[in-house]
Image (cartoon, rainbow, N blue to C red):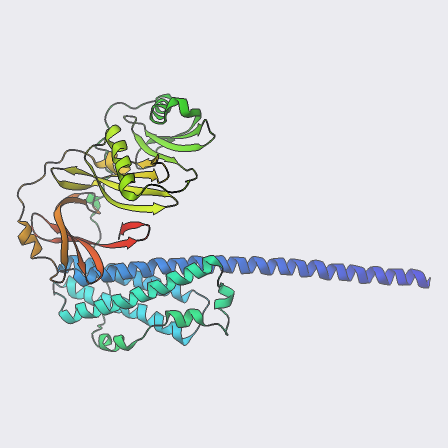
Length: 449
């Protein structure tokens, strides 16, 4: 009897131990899941913060050289919005400190100041030298903030730090790193004004009609015709199998989506337009061996490819070098005028010069021979509109697209203010400032924003 009681007691103890272990395991697992979900949320919010701080830096740079009240108001309004969003994502990070309050105040001041200056521009007033100096100072701080955030992103990716470390009371490296000296703001705050609301007129609806592809001609082709076009493009002898997922009717161009299996079991993705059977998209990912070509050699390969496939007179603009391949943007050139809407992207392998990809949507949608106006102001008159601090490096005519799906003939001026490179577009017919882009020269290529 005693033995049976002992056995029952041990069974109960074992059951309790097992229950505790199981409960502990599930609590541990649940805790890990919660931590992982939190980590993912913090990562997402942090990278959103980086994105908006990058935009703040870009718009601050543009605002320092704009000479047009209308364009300046647009740039400053975008700056106001991006700074607000950056502040929102900064507040969502799980870090509380007096240091971070300084960074939040920096973003808040950028938002408030750009808002007040945009209202000034909207009313037709020009920015003063003091306004521009303040914007330049804010731009310097925005670069510092951007660089610190990018370094932290690198540390997170490499595992050198984690959100657990960063949220620790003993570890305030993040807060200290992104804290900013607020002395600059004392001179700005007295310039802030209260407004009852921001009214910004967006695009007019009549300008937002769908573009009819200008470069697609001929009849609609069948799915089988599209496969034959793909075989012709890739070389039938290289193809083991080709399949189609049908038409992508909601894309920019109605196209047949094809998947090609090569003889060496590599996969190629491809899209062929239904109208005219043109190659819209082609991408072939393979391992890149040791790089032996430079950008200039890759550019020659890409231009030969474009000429051989019916795309002459294409001029290289910007490029990105990534994972052993360089992707080069080409714009059509007509009578020495760069036609930026007619865009083609070509990806070239840097081990042997093989063409790994092409994307022709911009060209197929927009390409046509333009009747380029001769009734333009002189380039010297266009220069009078430029910011006096812009040191011009190159100049020429270009046609640029607008958000209203129209085009404008402009003088394109490439130049520098201090260490920042810009592209400034002055309307060639009336001298208005139409757009400003910031050029970023990175180790992987040249980009614009």
